[in-house]
Each structure stands twice: as structure tokens, then as C-alpha cells.
Image 1: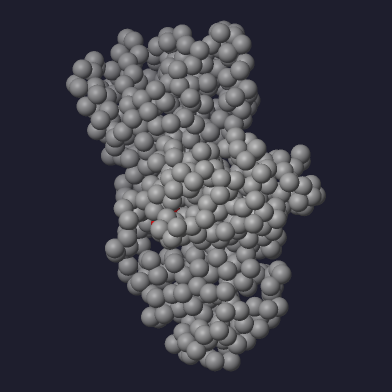
Image 2 (image 1 turned 90 degrees about the vertical axis):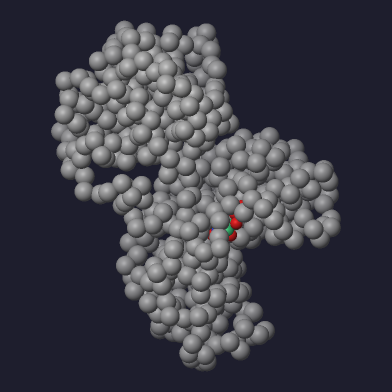
Amino acid sequence: MCGIVGYMGKKDAFPVLINGLKRLEYRGYDSSGIALYNGDLEIYKCKGKVQELENLTGGKIKSAKLGIGHTRWATHGEPNDVNAHPHISNNGDLVIVHNGIIENCDSLKQFLLDRNYTFKSDTDTEILINFIEYVQKEEKVTLDQAVRLALREVVGAYAIAVISKKEPDFMVSARLGSPLVLGLGSGEFFIGSDATPFIDLTKKVIYLEDGEMAIISTTGVSIRTIESDQPVDAVIHRLKMDLDSIEKGGYDHFMLKEIFEQPTSILNTIRGRLFENNAQIRMAGLDAISDKLEKANRILIIGCGTSWHAGLVGEYIIEDLSRIPVEVEYASEFRYRNPIIKSDDIVIAISQSGETADTLAAIKMAKAAGACVFGICNVVGSSIARESSAGAFTHAGPEIGVASTKAFTAQVTVLTMIALYLGRSNDNLSKSRFKEIAKEIKLIPKKIESMLELDDKVQSIAKLLNKSNNALFLGRGFNFPVALEGALKLKEISYIHAEGYPAAEMKHGPIALIDDNMPVIIVAPRGGMYEKIVSNIQEVKARKGAVISVTSYGESEVKALSDAVIEIPETLDCLTPLLTTIPLQLLSYHVAVQRECNVDQPRNLAKSVTVE
Ligand code: AGP
């Protein structure tokens, strides 16, 4: 996700900012930029790496003691020079860097257009800085008050830093929903999305809380509330973490950090899209192809690996809620088997990276056959996003660990919203059922949070597996794809051979594998298939298989049959994959750590398979 840095002090700001941006590269980005105040505002920004930004300045930087910088992870607008931050206001006085999403940017933009404001970029950030300019002019206030009053009208998530050439003794920052840290040096001050940009320059930090803003001046820092401009008695912390652990947010691995980010990433996935009260899904990509969706007789979902598993969950949910036939295909098979593709097919292509070669090739083939392609990607500006006729971004933020975790739950969340959209469009889903599901989706982040508290318990259960050579994952209904995904997680990071199966398939062969050396992980939440999966557990136990179950709180029958149980909160059957996946992610993570495997970069694997 985006990263911001800021500096005010005695040093030359340029090297501090550039080094700070390089420290933030681990967060993933597609462009970068800096703004310096040296009597005037100088802005340098470009698509690509920070090194390219440094080359762009070509040493023609005049000395400056104040500046802000940004690495951009595109959410609104393609990755290019124009959309890169910082953004400057129409009057040329104000510049901003921003991490987050302004949900009401369209209405703010129209408000400003009506007042003759112009825009160069497609970003929500440029709208925000012009709105701050507008407020400052209308209210005749200082920069800090203009920022505060403007943010009170903003809906969404932000961490910002703003400077003005008319008030060069101040730097204003604020946060709501995106992280922001202040560094306190001696006579110098730093801003960062985390402490990595300045950890070698000061260990004294203030963590801004949501709804707070910081007014930094050459004499000190004042923390105030955005809503009511009340002073905040901020706590100064002394950093103990080293650079490497800050990049991982204090977690031992990116994968664990990303597992724990899922309450936030799912909130960002549904942000501005799910409206329970009027039973509406707002997704521009779906509206853009609504005529094709109405005529769709079939939906083809294509993807690879974890994305294919998300597609399988999508098949179950979309057919259940919209009654439109869905087929799920491995992209690598689809592209070569001479499939039947009709011009009224809707093809949903799922890809976290947006660069998977097989998926990209399959999309091109489907488009050539006249099908409409809807891309679900996590990377704005990626090849698959650009190749798709329409699409929706998962907004899960950069996924660094090779094993996909938060991208999977974000993909399933987008597919669930698509199922709701389609079900309401063709009237196969009642308003009341829509509202019931939408209401429960909004509770999922909190329920995942409660499950993450089971991490220690899962870590001890992992000891039952870490010496195994094989494992079986079983699930039924919506949780059959979860069994496949759990098996993939375990095999790809711990190198234990694991297979996922529909639980009822055991009697058609795999049950021959069961003995006391074959651990079986069974996904058995309360719901439609519960009774049947209990009998599957009994079949395994009768053959001395060790059973680890993922079930709902209080399910005593499963508990009595299992050697270990991980309990999940109650939810609707169709939403259980969003919860049952979490313990399986944690389980594979801890088994891999206990086997001293390279969790974030497993052997033989790449984060994005851009070749066949
Ligand atoms: C997921 O844990 C794997 N690393 C892998 O299967 C991945 O899901 C697959 O390569 C597809 O990648 P994509 O989503 O970026 O297209």
C-alpha cells in the first residue's frame, strides 16, 4: 500500500526523503514522488521505482529544509507520472501526499468543478488538496484549520501530510484508517506511514490515532482532534523494533502480518460497495457491463492456485444466490483444451498479481471469442486488470508473502458481492435475504479478529502435523474449496504433501490412505452439511486417523470425535469460507515455522507466475 514521508528540520530534506521512500519500498508501490520547499515548491514524481525518481531529479535539487514524499500503490487511477503523488492545488500553494481511499471523492470533485476547479489526475488525492485549498480560501484560515475543516467533510480512509508555500514553518498531517507515525528528533521532525523511513535518525515516536492531526512547526508538535480541535496529550514512545521487524509490522514474517491484516483488508474490500439498507451493491465494473450480465446464460471463472480456489467458492455462492450457471476452470487447462466460449458468456478472471501468464492468455482467448471479461485483481494497472473489459480491485493492499492469504479472503468477498448484485438484478435473491447476508458480511472482520486470538492454540496444534509426511483436508459444500486451499497452503510453505477432498469422496478411494500416520484436517462448521460431515469424521476415526477439526463454537459432537479442535464464530453457511480459512492459514504458517521452512519465499515458488 502507499507510503508517506515528511521532514522538517536542519538537514537537507532531499536525502532524508529519498532514503525514507527507499525504506518504504517493501510495502509495494508503482510510482513515487517528493515535494520540497526551498522558497518555492519543487515537485518531482514519476511512475516506477524510487531510483528512477532520484535519477529524475538528476542532482538539480536546491537545498530545502521542508518536504514530503510518497510511494503510491494505485487505488484510483492508473500508475503513471500524472497520478503519482504529491499533488498540488490549483493555486499552486498547497501540496499533499495521501495513503487511503476517499469514498466521497466524486461528490467533492463535482462540488469543485462547479467552482471552476480543474484536475490533471484521476486521483482522489488531487480532489482532497483542492478541497483544502477551497476551504482555506472560503474560511480565511491557516493551513492546519483548513485541513481540519476539510477532513470533517471527507468520508473514507486517509493518512496525509500537507505543506504550503505560504506557511513554510508548518507541516500538517492527519489520519483516519491508515497508519501515521511522527518522529521527534532534536530540532527536526519526521512523518512516516511507519517508522522505517527515520528509524536510524530518531527512536522517539508518536503514533497518531484515528481522528487526530499533528501540526508540526520548527518549535514543536501539537496534536489535536480533527472533529473538535481539542488538544491531545500524546504519548512519546521509544522504538525498540529494528528495521526488519518494522517492515513486517512487528510480525516474524510477511505472511503472518498479512493473515492478521484480514479484518482491515476485508473492510477495505467492501468499503463504498456494500449498502445493506437499500439492498445495493455499488461496483462501477459491474454497472459497466450490466446489460451483458442481464443476458448472461453462463459465468466462467478462471484462475490459478489460490485464485482458482476463490473461484470455486464463487461458483457455489453465485449459483446459490443468483441461479446463474457457473463453471470454474484452471486457466492453464482452459487456454489449451479448445473450450466452448459463447459471446454471451461472462468470464470472471481472478488474479492477485494481475500478471499470471496462464490467466492472461485465457482472458485474451475468451475476448477473441466475444466473451465479456470481468477481472478481479489486487494490483491496479496490472496486465490482467488492463486486459479485462471491466473489473473490481480487491483493495487488499500489497501481498508480499508468496503464499496468498488476505488476497484469497478479499477475492471471496468480491465474489460474494457479485453474487448479491446478480441475485438482486435477476430477482432470484430477495431483499430480505440480501440484507441478512450484507449485515453478516459487515460482522466478518470482527469475527476474524476474534479468531486471530486463537493463534497460540493453532501454534500448539501445528505440533501434531509438523512431523507428518502427508495430510488430508476435507470439507463439504462452501467449505470444499476451503479444504483445497488449506491443503495448498500447507504443501507450498511446509513441503508436506497435502490433498484437499470433498469429504464424501473419502469412500471412493482416499479412505484407503487412513491410518495413524495420516492426519486429517476437517472443515466442519455448523450449517447445511454438518450432520453428513460428522459421519465422515466417524469414518476417519474408525480407521485410527488423527482428526483436527475446524468447527463452530460449542459443537460437542465434532469435539468429542476430534484429537484437536479450532472453533470459529457462528455465521451464515455461504460466508463460512471467510472464517474457516483463517485457522488453516495459521496452521500452515506454524507448521512451516516449526519445520524451519522459508515461510515468505518457499523453495521453487514465485509470487507471480508470469511465465507458462
Ligand atoms: C497461492 O498461495 C500461490 N502462491 C499461488 O497458487 C497463486 O495463487 C497463483 O500463482 C495465482 O496467482 P495470481 O492470483 O497472482 O494470479
